[in-house]
Length: 490
Image (cartoon, rainbow, N blue to C red; front, side, top):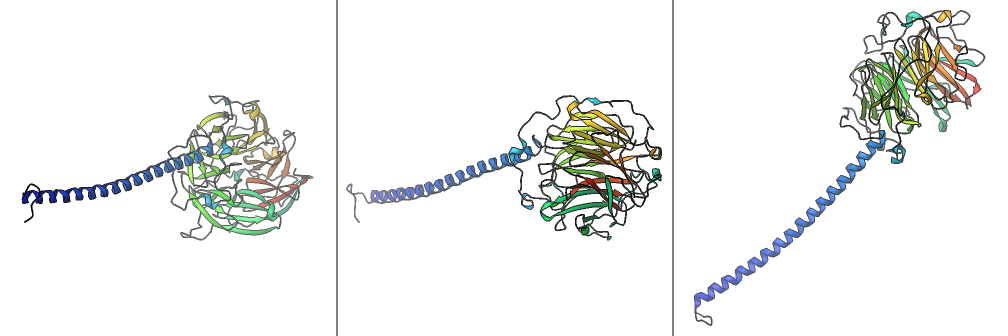
């Protein structure tokens, strides 16, 4: 047996084992270094992913903030039906520049209670029975939510109920496509297609689309059939078209839901279910993918309708809220509401605070509309009065119009009100079965009287056709009337 220099065979064995151990240690060390490099790379990737997710979260938060100018509450909820995504819409998410920070729309920190500019004369109390006429009935799926005022219809002496206007407004056509009372109407001018499309919503649970320019039906949305059809809705109370995507239309229902449709294709996009009671009103923001809805649950909900999420819930109402409207680009963070507590309110959506409370009506406030050219917010009430509120004077009442001054209209109730786009006219849907159209420059002058319905007119809508103002009505006699003005719409 060979020996080392020391002549000890045992020592040679020990040295050989030691060398092998060192070699194994070196190999293990290299393996550990490789693993450490891999772990370091993985850790770096995790850090990079974390930073990316943080940036993405900041971007999403910024998008939600710019929708209403502030931090979005953690109360948003997704609906069971398919939600909307930005890819469903032309243009996707609105640009951040659209919601730069600006001072509040209305300066006062505490909301002033606005009193009428002059004492209100005439009958007080509107319908003496109740805000809901239980003898009339309501839409399909509703117990009695009519608000028709049908008991107050009066024959108008000297006016033919088959349809009559005056020297300015001429009746073009009666349109009857529904099986039940028509409670809502809206219009959209599709300039590229050369069409003026009217949408009517009825207690028969459908929306009927009609082309006024071509005077022919377009399509029906929803169904009157019984069962669980995907397109089934409850009876309808309000309709509006999106101002940022003209293919989108929204409608509200007695089934506590808000429905969004692509009216061009006939596809139901979404069913939004945040409200806890019947949903009465709807409006779309003028420049953002934002929508507001009002309900008998005493709340107004502000939605991001692209994502189908709740941005704000405005709950400072004492009774049912029948209408809500945005206040244009000048007051882009503000929304106005009208309520059965006989008041109208203006909210700053950024912090949900009240900017103004307008008092003066003596019955349910049903109609509300704002027009930047007219520079007025209009409200209409079952007390028979219309009020014009001036934002230049901290939303104080500038004019009060008594629709009951004419003896034949002594029990008239004002339902929804709507300004013409040019701000020249204000139309009031009325319980006597007609429409009163006031000229804003001289609101105290006698109105244009448009008759032809045999039941309560609940809603009106304006449009422009061949350079002329056009007006359509929605009546509980199951029909709509199409009027054309002989004045220019510009």
